[in-house]
Image (cartoon, rainbow, N blue to C red; front, side, top):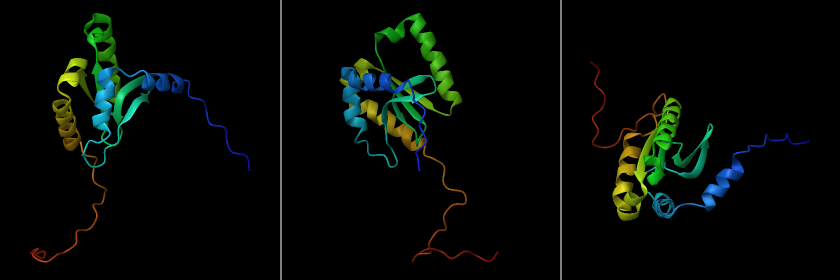
Length: 144
């Protein structure tokens, strides 16, 4: 049986190039994100989301982390970033932005902010919730 041909995504080569050409701040943050101790997290670098690339994306928690250089202060880039953030918001993602110098001088503090966002942005519990086990010391349900 012949396998179906997958559609080619033209963004992939650009994403690969961006992963190989990370800034010093992105490289430093990536080392920390790979070992971030929040359950259920897995970040991807230069993740494609619609027409955009996210520096780091945790799809399970719908969280995007962007590391911005000084060019993001310019009017045209700031307008582009605002449109991009609005698009990602509509897709259900929360976007955190940090300046390069924040990451380079205080990566632990940046990671604390990211970890807090992940904890408050936990994925929903299954519906229906799994049954709870009755263990020793737990009060049995009342018949009221």
